[in-house]
Structures are given as structure tokens and as C-alpha cells.
Amino acid sequence: MAKVVFYGKPGCGGNARQKAALARSGHELDVRDLLTAPWTAEALRSFFGARPVAEWFNAASPRVKGGEVRPETLDAESALALMLADPLLIRRPLIEVDGRREAGFDAPLIDAWIGLAPVASPVGEGCPSHERSPERSDAETCGRSAVG
Image (tube, rainbow, N blue to C red; front, side, top):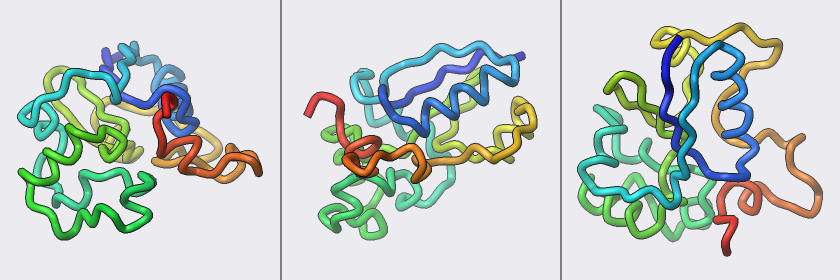
């Protein structure tokens, strides 16, 4: 199977499910912290391909959800500058296999690319509501840094 470099956020339930799906499919994971990786604009840009700038962003980020950052109004240069300053804005996971890079966990795309074992319930992006406790919102479990 494939050796997958997986950039995610430690403690994110959605990323945990995605890693489990990849491992269950026989892939070898090289897990890296998206928040502390030494990103450059060029390296980060390479994960987004031809996607519109608005699709580069983590829709669950408190700054996006709260309207402070409006991805649909940004050009590529401005978007990358914001993401370098605040990695929680980056759509995750970022995945690399054999030089190909993708952002987000689009299960059909990943299945066609490297293969995914069938599962009873689909694995996608974000944190399902059953993984959140009443005391912790989506922003606390997946949108905010574990540090602050």
C-alpha cells in the first residue's frame, strides 16, 4: 500500500477517524502536526491544486465561522499569509503520497487515488456531533489549538 504523509491537528477527532481509515486500508502513516510544521507559502500552496481559494480554508476555524476571515474574498497571496500566521485556518488534513498533495479528506478521491477499505459509515471532513461532549464545542475540539 501507500506511505501517506498526514498533516493533521493533534486531538482532532475527525483527523483520528481519517488516520484510522487510512491505517485500516493498509497504508503506512507518517503523521505530522499541521500546526507546528515549518510551512512556506510555496509548500502550503502545493496542497491546494486548482481548488478555489475559499476551499483552502478550514470551515470549522473559529475565525472563519465567526466571520473575521472571509475566504471567498481573498486572493491566493493573502490567504497563504493568513494561514502561515494562523495554521488553524488551513483545511485539514493535508496528505502527500509519492509527491502528489491534496487538502481535505475527500473519501472518493482518496479511494480512487490510493484506496480505502469499505466502512459502515463514511469518513469525511470535520468532527461528527457524537464526538463532541456537551461541554466542548466543535471549535474547542477541532477549531482551536490544543495550546490555547
